[in-house]
Image 1 (cartoon, rainbow, N blue to C red):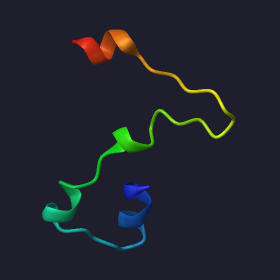
Image 2: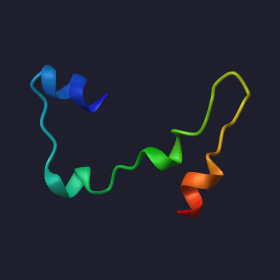
Image 3: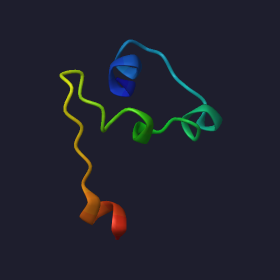
Image 4: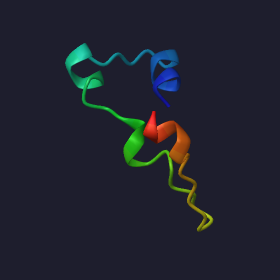
Length: 43
């Protein structure tokens, strides 16, 4: 999504980018299945 915005000529300041995290939504599957990689989270 960020790459698409940049391709369209939009830029976000580093201060804003520092606040964006995929962790709030990356694990959510719109089809009702959630996946948590526990091995990766523990390391």
